[in-house]
Image (tube, rainbow, N blue to C red; front, top):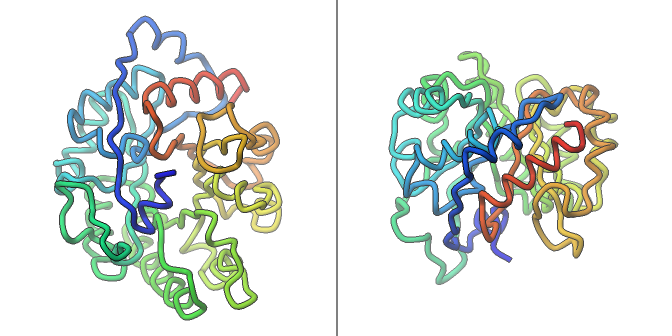
Length: 301
């Protein structure tokens, strides 16, 4: 299965299909709930560049009000400067809250290539930290998120913590909160240690907080609520993403095995403030986003 985790490890991308959400449907989906809901734009990976404004409008029409961006094949932020992208979101009733960046240079397996149109160099915190922090500040963001960083050895984990702490200090100077986004690999033992535990312990709890991906942490066999209780207030961002019933990969929210009821009963303890729906490489991004939104509102979220 091709998904964000596999892409960041280095596999490539697949095209996504399109679906127009009728205006009449938006009123149904936009029913009230306890929380503002956002979208991680990696859900539209390989598609959003075809019509950035149009695709953002479809997201708003479903009822989502917040955006978390990611890298794309267009230069800058979907072909715009940070200020331009922020203004585009605002014009559509969307609030740009957060942006994903890589922790280190993207390394592809032998023979693998990035999808057509991607730049040879994707900015990352190890090589381009200050530039990325300055751009986030220029866009008025509240959060900068490290989407992935090598954690395959204890030395890599040590370097990851150093990069995150350094970036967290730079972010603090411009009133941005740095977070780290997990996959399931951070919960697999490395030389008898759990990388995620070492990262929680090896980074400053104020400078480096966490964006917990509910799909991948569930796939790893870890209960998110246990993490909330062990590290209260450390999780201001959540990736609201389901794990399919075969426990292989992402699914629309409400169609898999993630215990959202229990998780959302403990979001205050987590310190959660923003909730970004994501589905890595779905067959149809807008069908998935609409389904997820409807199911979350039905849950009372």
